Length: 189
Ligand code: S3P
Image (cartoon, rainbow, N blue to C red):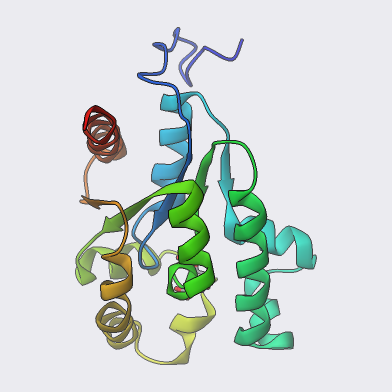
């Protein structure tokens, strides 16, 4: 019974048919996985988390990949995994925060997907990332300073995404609504 939602109620039909994968980009804590899962449900398509795929392929956690093989090896795996996902059927893809910095990844995403930058202010990101200690880049110093530095370096790349959405605190469904509206408007143009 695929069309039942979490409460067992009959889910409404998807608002449109997805022709290209939707790729969520943005800093750690932007809500790429949380929003991605809900968006996939709303659109009736599969959800895939690139970080989880990298862990599956490596057989260990991202933290361990960074520790044992280094960041460069992680980035290489990340590029390969996203390239594979972009060659697949339309789905919702949540990427890790650094993925869109890679020129080849950006090229693939632009070619066969629609990219969405989930934006949040530093305080919101900080509150969200402090719930887990699974992010190797944030364990190297003060997380707030690191996030500010990353935002400064990365925002110009995220800004290349097709759609920009504020990922505010509050019900996740509101962010999903904003994404669906933006996608509908884009289709209408
Ligand atoms: C990273 C973000 C992480 C993960 C890795 C590196 C980054 O993903 O890919 O720890 O460079 O910003 P999330 O953005 O899902 O936390």
